[in-house]
Length: 87
Image 1 (tube, rainbow, N blue to C red):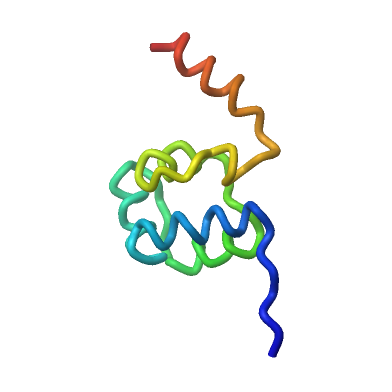
Image 2: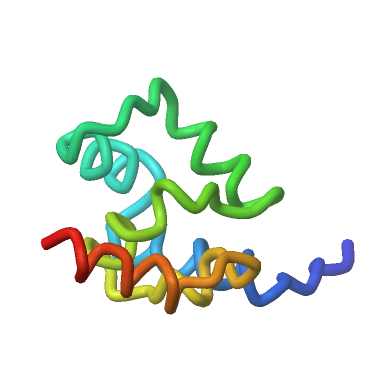
């Protein structure tokens, strides 16, 4: 069986999962921050389909994997600047 090559986004969430200690550990850590993820299978879907941007800042904070890698379609410079202005 041939190994599938990961996209950069898939590699980023895979790295975050590894750093967090697994899909269940990442799910629990995100839930502790106010997210509602009912199953580690949700994280598994991100490995296939990409990470929703609303989770990226917390994943970055928890694992060090940058939002820009997790969800490159989002203009994180604008989001980060907006967050700075709100503080």
